[in-house]
Length: 470
Ligand code: ADP
Image 1 (tube, rainbow, N blue to C red):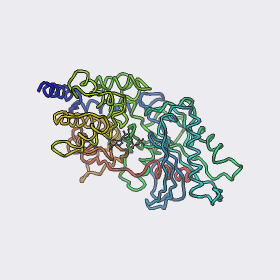
Image 2: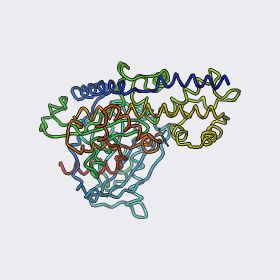
Image 3: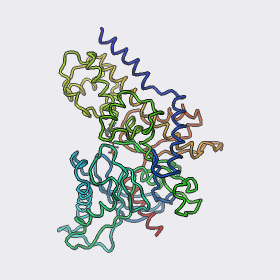
């Protein structure tokens, strides 16, 4: 039929736009390496390469009782972590849902809510029947706040800009550790109750992931998040961070760097192969011109890219002929989880896909349409993984980790977390294939694996490392 031919033509066009050749990937890696180096040289660069004031690797012997609060993207999480040393730990946690309103209402309200949840958690776990909490000394709190913050010490961090769809006014340019502390004053410290908690560290989830994974596996070299957003952290030699020279740290010291790599190529848009759909997402976002790399990769955006393509094809009379399509025409109704679902359908008739469109969007689909959807999901998901491989390759190359020619090659561990990595079918395989396309066979020494809980265990280990330094 005509519609079938139109779909096939579209697919050819989309394949061209979304496919990354190994050669193109290597070009992206080269530009990425330069960008990372520029970020280490001076403040205020496109990819800011933020010093975290987390010095060196954990020993694995860190011990003690810690609280962790995680403001990440979708949920707010509070946990209690008992570090037992020898890379072992126990975690108890509670999740609290964040509303869209809270993400955009006054920032102090958002941090107050974090404090209130922590207060409730502490009362539930450490309080008597009346919620009264008696402790000999305050429990150290690690606050995982996964937005780019400029830090000049570990328990402090000025928010550079919101990302991942957050926009609460009154936070950008402010010390968010301080805003959280003000919330703590209102909740945890009220009724002149004995102060049971103390904020000791402001942590990015990527740094937490790096440290938590290294706590249990010393092969870890980078921590990466593929969730609502996308970002990476790794350990850098102080000698390679010219912009912190003034601190007078020993040259052989190391500090974790939160890359904030989602901002890559946002200034000139010269390197990444952006499509009209990527441009549309950027221009209609609450932060146009920012996070160009992240917007092509992260969970918040992949479903929307898919949806925009469907909408264009609806307009051109190719998909869902003669049906009411308004349900699918609302921005952001097509979650990235749907792409996972489409890619995991192994039936010939693609029955899960039938169900998905019928149930969520009241749309009937032909087999040809469903096959097209599947191909489209593969294109979008594969591009995301291969672009991510470019970022990982840049970190690995920059540190010369593959230059060592000992046999067998030492494993370069990439600790990875987030729904995209954990739940999207084949995402890990596509990442690793991408790394082999970039580096050839020696790229197989780079292994990605599911990270330890960065914002819980990682926050606790960092809090413990902070205590040990004092
Ligand atoms: P965080 O908000 O802390 O980053 P997640 O790692 O769970 O949390 O990431 C949430 C993002 O992952 C959302 O953008 C959502 O669309 C996407 N997501 C949720 N489930 C899946 C799935 N099964 N497959 C792919 N993406 C998913």
